[in-house]
Image (cartoon, rainbow, N blue to C red; front, side):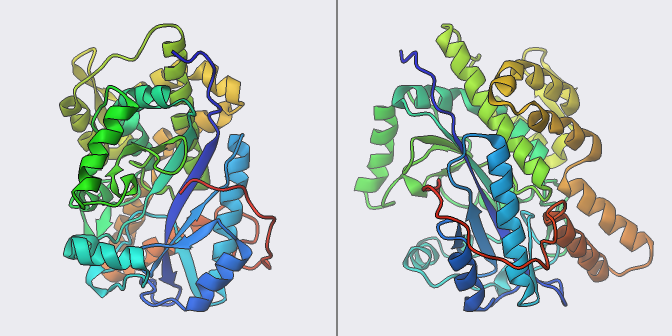
Length: 397
């Protein structure tokens, strides 16, 4: 067993939707110049996504959560400022309130053309965005051991991040409808567990040799060992509209990984629960978000999510102190108290309808809210001049 502590460095990726400021609908065909300018100002930090209305950003490798927050603030602010020149704006939400997937165009890149050809309508419906958090765990055996234990906590991270209550103009009744769309893709959902790194690689290699996938980047589980970096990549979260919510989720994931490492160091480990049971909590988080209840498997009953969050904060207190991110993880209490993006979107929509707006106008009001909240607290994000920063270290992707 490796006794040395991993670096636990962190990297965060977010996907945004680009909306037209006049119609509030998605920008189906944003100008190529917008992406060119973003790539020039943010080298190695921004890339196109499968759909042309999407844009992906990623921080460099960060030692501190404060650094990750500063990087994400710069990324959001810069993209908002560049987009404003084209009368567009980014929104950090996992679905758009009323846009239709059939109207979208996919990006003309070899990788995306292959996806469109291989997965057909299923991938064309992927009008969804997410947040991915990488945490570095250099030892391969340790990485797989923690990978096997972390799924227990994935529903909790999802509950804190929900931002997709609408789909094509309909209130879905779910706080994270994104997962319902994404599950149509192959190789998604909760991960399998593996006895070793070798077993994991042998399993993936079966599909590679059969010609089904070219490598492990086509495995899209809620949590996966990165195919390119010595990290575990958490992928279950919706993209958080508020920056501080995103940082709270990222910091919690990092601290949970270290907490499990401490258990292993002390010859302990988290109790194993079946995928069947964790899947039920995943559904409850998807359905109700942070306002609901999850199953406490030890008690055999459901418990308010806020109570479970307090237990997690106590579990990771030592780790949050170690990383100097106590305030970041304790922001989870504010999410529980104030609601997630999904809760705020629903409240704004219902209030607008109650005020006499038709559904389309009410959804446009939600988009206005998302535009503002995506850059909330980022000074002059819409108007400030943008300029290039220094070259970053390679980022997780």
